Length: 358
Image (cartoon, rainbow, N blue to C red; front, top):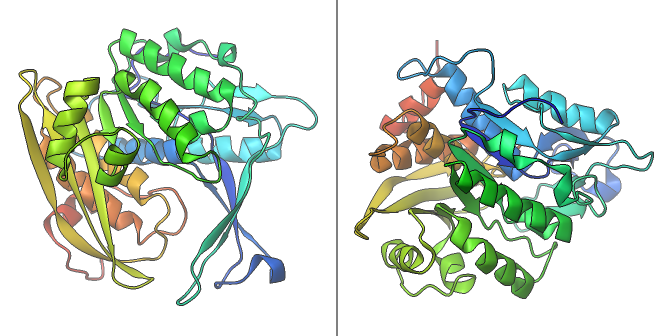
């Protein structure tokens, strides 16, 4: 790895994969061609933050010669690995801390997406076992120079699910980030095809005291963390009291058919005195082109506001609204990446009206 972190707004750590999808709601077993797209939870958010930072016109910080966002992962030193790195860099994400696997048999994780239509649900087939990232060893990453001066460190529960090495690297990154003064953002993002509920719960509980901002549904807060409370406010207060969390992000989704949903979010912030306050975004009706990465887009909008505001007095209400707008807009964009501009997100905060942009 090369470069010195010294001041990234966001350090994102996790695996990215190549997504392969038959066009036109086709079946994989009958496909004659596959659409190829990049994706990965942490990278999706990193791309969103980088794009919003680059396109913002108000409150934008002047940077000198380095991207605001960096993505740390382990990729195969082959065309697929370079494809993922190139896609990150296209959107302004730094990749100078990448770990490269130059073994002849090094491989990139892939997944096949079959898009369904009622009554056939969409489905995902993973092919990620023994990927370059899954074979990561914790000592391959020197976190101290990467997180020095960083403001936020993002990782999801997908990364520690990949292997024991990834779990240890996740823990080491979170510890280093907090020691450097960064806020740690964690989304459990449970994947039953990677590990059992019990395995995930054990890992999540071990990492919980290292988290500052938790992104998790009320069901996850209750099930994985054993937190009492039937509302985000109650569960977040319990999370603060037990683990020291500063804030909890809880998004909601109500299905209104396979291609139409109503989405919303509540952010609960707990101040130094232990007083909790809830900030709820208005619910938004979305027509779904592609729902993958919507939660990652929410976090991108949410973090964008925190990064451009007063760190000592975060505007949680505005962060919730901008996150909600970014997450809703992502449903209209094909692929995992939230390819959005700050102006588009700002407009969506205020209105749901649709008209041709001229």
